[in-house]
Length: 239
Length: 258
Image 1 (cartoon, rainbow over the protein chains, first blue to last red):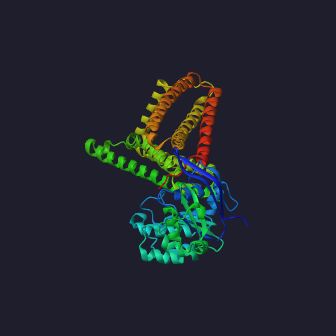
Image 2: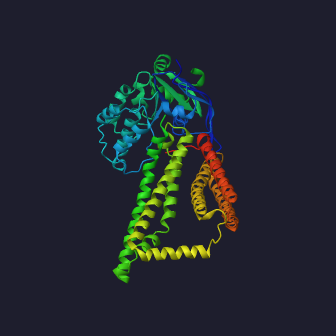
Image 3: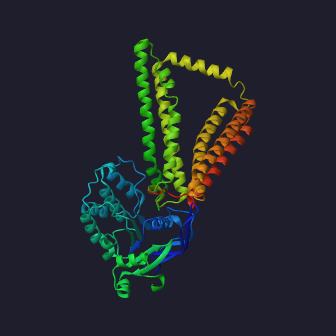
């Protein structure tokens, strides 16, 4: 069985700056992976490279067996910002757009998700608060039966109560063999659902460990591990 | 993978809206002009055809620019760049919908003009006859072996190619700027874009001169060979630019970061 994601020797430069260098990452199917790093570390860029939104990189990116851009876009469900829609577009029109262009869009799953997230899809995009908009993006992203979900800071702006409710249930919205990568700053809150953690630091992946291994080897939780890496309490040699 | 038809459908809607807005503006201008003429010159002196053909001359240009802006936005929006469709299909769907929306705008306007000519009756027919005579005697006198139908077909094809070519060129400049700017330091973007603007203006001036020369050459001696070679040249030029655009979309042009 092939990996859900395999990145080999990935380097990405833009405007004379190296954003990511020598990134190697392999993720097996069915995992929920936390992509952690400080602001500007390259988490969003890595997701955009996987989703074929960022170009001009060196190295290879494979989602399942697919390395070509269009094949990756078929396999990946990325939490996009809905830039392409007018502010007066109704949520139901965005749903119709998704249903039309994505063969793996499940109308039933969408209905379940908007019911669960208490969204009214008769509303217009402009009428949504930041948090409600993020909830809607989560609903759209998870309504696809994708191989790989990329959730880029999906909980920003969502109130803490809803956030906890979504996080505790997020796993049920994906098929067991599907993989989910979540980048978020609410590390403590997402930690319980993470099977693995990937930390980006100094423009590359400095750690990739399972949550269990972190607890066993270091005797600390995911957030403490992540902070220790950044503060230098855990060195590269310790990994 | 999303089919070409579905890609066209999703790209079509916003452009269709633009065309409808422009038609609404045209309608308002016609009504406004009717009322104004009616009050100032009397309701019985109104010539509907003169009004429908006279007003909103600039609307075609505005529609062209608005559609171009929308098309360029589409190339760099996450929403569209994430579509599971090949870059060639995506690009062609973008071009087809832009051309389609513009054609829709033009055809509806022509229909309105045609209907108003029918309503206006003999007076309009006389006017049309007068203008055709002016064009015939003051402009092109000799069509050689081609005949006026051939010339009409040639002009229609050439204008269509020029319009599509202009959109293709706009996309080429946009995508090239986008792709090349990623190789420059962030601080030098403005200088680069300023230099590029100068180059683009230079190219456009040169292109304009070339088009005038081309017109003179064609109207000097209408013949099949000249017309076919010109159309062929334009087709090759447009297709080559399209191929470069697809290449840029595939390998270099990124969606805009939110």
